[in-house]
Length: 524
Ligand code: BG6
Image (cartoon, rainbow, N blue to C red; front, side, top):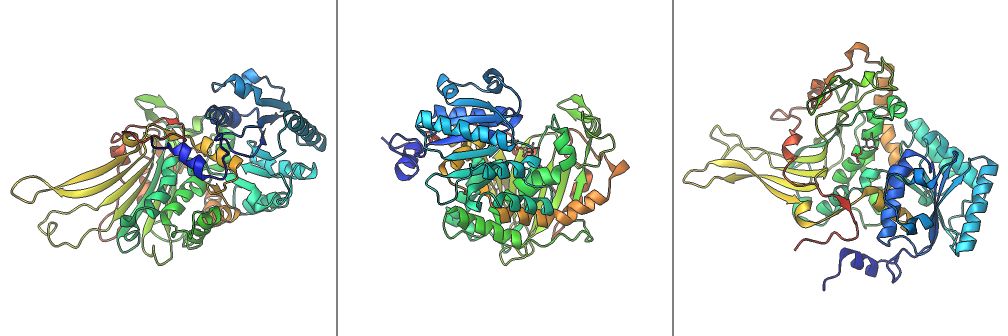
């Protein structure tokens, strides 16, 4: 019988023992243990990993928070087995020296009583203002094992990772004064998405595309993220951050790096991250004086989503009534290196749009106007569409001949839908949490990556902060495709360029439910 993916992984990986669990015992210590992220994402992901027997044989989760809490409230957003509850504990404490001493004593007691080796995975699911404080408190409190110690410790940090280049650099310095780089795992949950990881496989495991992955053949690339949700209950954070920081600096620039990086020398974490860094270093600095503009911003006003009237951003709870915070960004990026010289990359992301979807579309140059396109007809560009979510797919748009006597042509598409081949997809948090437990930093962001992307966006952030939009906002209606100004960042080549109609790709494939990452059993 063929081995499942799971069995293969376990039999070839050093990380798993023969019972199929990660080998190292550990304590998973979640700061912000009573918060939304922990309840909504982290506990359910850990619950699923335990259910799939992917966590170590001996481990405990300590959720740390300042408030008194009951398990029934902490575990209200998932289904948990008795086994999970037996591995779960809430500790009410703070980050003062006494608070950390209490945590240390609790951790040591649990390790002793349960025979768990004191490997610590610290997860900071707290507001970012607290990151440096907690890291320093852990270091001072003697909970940070030196990198070469017999037991390991790792620090997982959520975004936002700084709010500009200065704060990101300062945060890196603070964390690096307590932990070494290889102990720090900066999460970008987009890297946990299956279809994002597949960009690497698509590019570097298929010989047909790598040869044409350059400015000789590619006209331009669009990376688009559209969501229906607005600021929701995160007004405090979002109204300060804005969309450029919330989505472009991290998630979309990560996708961008994977699409544009050179082949790494190996699949090691640093080899991959070195190449991502190299491409970020080759970015042409944003010239804010150039025309057409390199970037535009938008904010939603009242509109309708699925025929239901909804208010505008400035009317949402907790948002300043004159807020100039952007909820939409479109930006043009250029890479000044041999592979990508002259190829524009257009990134856009917006909240409260008419649809949810994340796509990367690589548009190839047209053939010379000779044969089929010489008689008034114009051939369309070939395109490769990577659908990242909610459906996961790769589509290749081609021109084909219509059956019949004459050479009539049609646009057609070869579609690879994950749902036709696999039953399940891995949940991003499950994948990333397990990688952190295993000690594989490949899908986490290195300090130089975050600093380079902040540095790149810095002039724009400063310019926008200095120039409030006032009456120019709102400039798009909730439920629409975003502001008309978004077309302004597109630079016409030989022919006009438009934002693609991404909605047309929505129903080509069925979405697949996040499920067991270990059993993507190919369908017969
Ligand atoms: C988060 C942002 O990082 O990503 C949110 O803070 C955004 O504002 C979310 O909604 C989008 O993630 P996904 O996986 O739903 O595309």
